[in-house]
Length: 81
Ligand SMILES: [Zn+2]
Image (cartoon, rainbow, N blue to C red; front, side):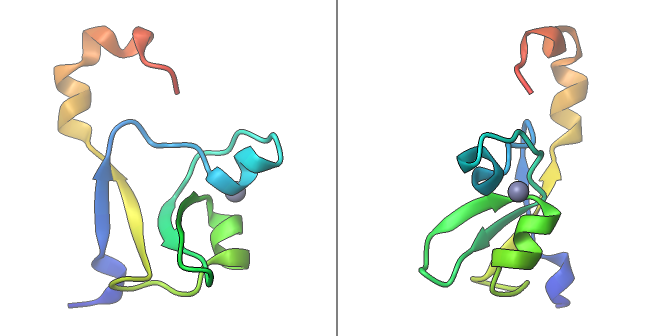
């Protein structure tokens, strides 16, 4: 049970909540806790600055649900990323 295997499946990949706060649009890589206890979507650099660690109850790596992409291939143009 390696910590690096903790993943959460998402579709589509959300934007980084912290970058969004500063008006920047960045793809999130993690769903992670900050020390205040709230969960945020974070990109790699925000996770390194604000994340409290990788592991159960701390953060989960986002994994794009690829089988859903196949199903929705025809609808991809309509999805806002
Ligand atoms: Zn960010």
